[in-house]
Image 1 (tube, rainbow, N blue to C red):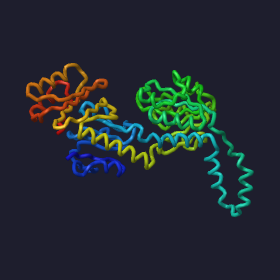
Image 2 (cartoon, rainbow, N blue to C red; image 1 turned 135 degrees about the horizontal axis):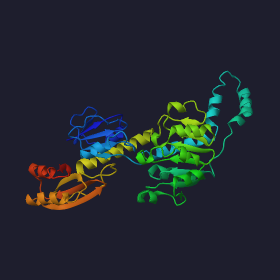
Image 3 (cartoon, rainbow, N blue to C red; image 1 turned 90 degrees about the vertical axis):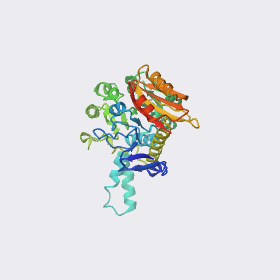
Image 4 (cartoon, rainbow, N blue to C red; image 1 turned 180 degrees about the vertical axis):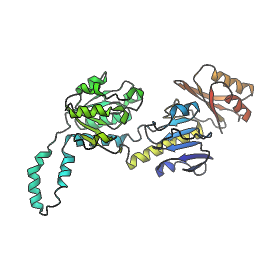
Length: 391
């Protein structure tokens, strides 16, 4: 029986993925094999010795102490792309709100509560609607920083709306490149994208390399009157620099999902309460994807969408027992493990080994179930972090 401790409100569709025959799931589970979380901050929280995996139902994992968990052989999963459509649609809403006089028009209409004559109201609105004239996004240029799951969907949406799209992503993966429309013009660097774009939408993860990538220096080269949209992470943008750029007229609007006190009441800021992924469909997609990844890891040892260990997938050979182990990515470890198996006459049927940076992961299918002493001998090998035997 596997035990999964949940945090936050997890979609029922995700929880239903866990068979009651093989899983015990709940918020008060003791000695859990896995955590299933959304926004729960795990920094500083006690780590159960039984914990082998954490799945975050969402893309960002800054609420998880990844480095600490890696040292303990705890695989951390996220769900990239599961909330992409929800964010994509909000980006479009943000562009339209920044371009048309939608918000100010709605607010004006709500001030007319003292009027009782519909005809008189209609005449007044015809007279006053010129105050809320805006522009159109068709024909404008959208610059997308980060061309992953969300960025590529935003690109497709903008192209469908008749926009021109330019993109910049120094870490563009092969999979992302295949997803990207050939109508997107790749830019060599961030300054060239900022100089060319009427709208700039950010879709990069929060990390040291992206912290305050939109700062005073970058904004100095942005196109006059451009609209900046941030539905990624707050740390990507230097908010002080953005407000200064808004005040001096260089930046036209700032639309974000991460309000700060200094932004409140600013006429050129449209701030939303972190609702980028807050749709029923998105929460369901993230929960189902996170649950599936946990199930495949717990039952088969397969890893997909981990942020700290390599992706590894190997089909199960009928009648075999599976041994998995995580280790420091140094030479000789796999050889030592195979020697332990050979010395104990445990026959290897199939195996796979993958590495990612300083860490490595291995799956070995063996013909017979190894004894506890064999598993302990593997665990005792230098640089082996954690061993699991999956029957």
